[in-house]
Image (tube, rainbow, N blue to C red; front, side, top):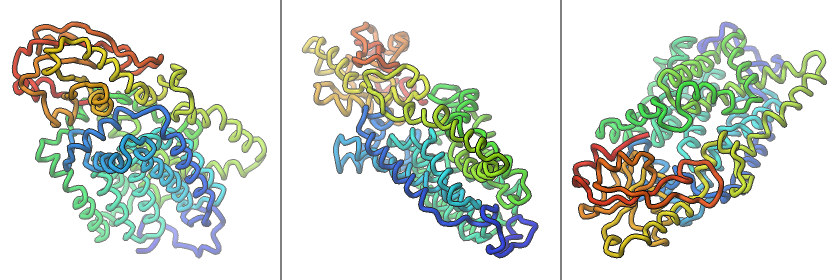
Length: 517
């Protein structure tokens, strides 16, 4: 397929006569992004053991004990990985988080590679890699075992293949897109959103003939084949991920809500990068020389619009913001090389400290957990959710020890969310706690309490009236004390002891205790 066939009106000129950094001509090979990627992964590994498990990691470990082809809120990939890593090194946070650190480094490398595909020189590729390495989405997701880290790499691999396809006209690169999307959909169904964006971008900006190309059709088949186990599980179970998406749309989850989703776009990479990725978007949509890549700019606009309209989380389209950042680097480098370069480059340098480096402090566990400033948790909700889980189970154990001996044989723990249940599963046996159950997301399918369990230690339920619909009596027996001043969803929360089950568990478990979010 010729260059003209992918949407460029001008014929391809020999690379030798193209000025360095011209869009449409691949930039020179650079080793700087490799060093930045390695430094990113190494930093994440060195900090991986600080603080503790995140609530989602505790959930993944539990889900890994109940392996399936799908779950209410995710596919099988990350729970299976969590089980494998915990089998290799039980209780080792560094091992558990190693894949995320490596994936984050891979994401940094890909952003530099995308800048190269667009024509960036060695300095531009290095700049793009540094912006990615210090971005919020890379640092936050690279520190934790997370489906988000998988999504990040999957989207960037697909975007790199798409840009390379558009630059070279070789539609066989569509196979790389299909492979990446298929693997990604074994983690979550979100890569389907990227597929919608790319197809819409091609429909809007061309080249539309790609939608009939045999390699593109083959790539679609690869995606569906790889995603089939999760898709079949979802279809068989009534697509429960749609229910989770509905809860997110209603604002029942972190980083959700339309205003919050919109605002997150101005910090998720970094405030420093905002004018850069905006410049990249404008260049992709308006520059004649970049007409071949216009579909990429439209892909982000379509995905962004869907996220806002559907009420999704603001970080869903963050990987495409990194693609726009890579494009914006070329514009920024060109701007900094014109006219009075000293003040332009000085302006770029001055912005690093106040607008870029704070991401390290806010998103990585570099401050002491027992003296974590409140503004860190205000900015980074997930930081608070990695602190105090052993102490959380200590609080439950204190209540359990206060029960009469005759009740301890029929007591269970009922938690409001999957992280609390995961904490009891991880730390509870050493403290003599009974098994924890929860109706949150896929936890509801991991088993319900025994029929004779009529005494419950309930935690994570802020509304006692809900417990009173299930039990004859609920009394406040204590509060969670994580022994640090941290604002998270557990610290200071009530612990109730409930007795006298009004109806059998079998009647209320799936219909009333079950909840998503």
